[in-house]
Length: 76
Length: 76
Image 1 (cartoon, chains in turn blue, orange):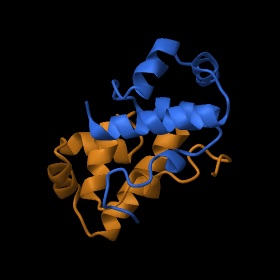
Image 2 (cartoon, rainbow over the protein chains, first blue to last red):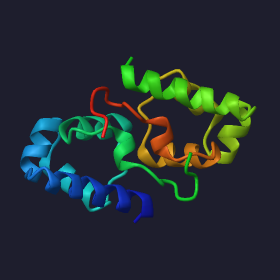
Image 3 (tube, rainbow over the protein chains, first blue to last red):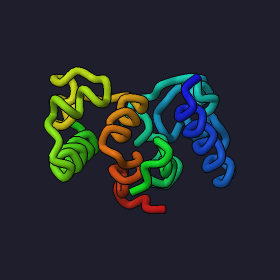
């Protein structure tokens, strides 16, 4: 498992929980399959940039909000 | 062409130019094919998250530095 996919998945799950949103609702709003969202949250899937943008739109945040310090040690 | 891939591609190119890096060198350091990097910079390819992380490592910034306001209107 890639460490950054793992970190990103955890951040997506945390943001979703913060919003009190179910995985079904997030998948629906992002126009993605629920099991696909489950794999992303578990860090098991190397998602595309467009899928990540769609998830962020549904999570009402920008991609930057979920990707600080990815990769580590490169803060701008 | 997806507007966000277009924006991301332009930001990758701007960061690369800022560092005075050629496309060949960026591709080499990111372990990606040069023509693939060219398509990404032109917004023609929906890259994966891991490819984006590898580009950011070579560009010495984190993914957040290139993805503020993507998608628009969702700033955290």
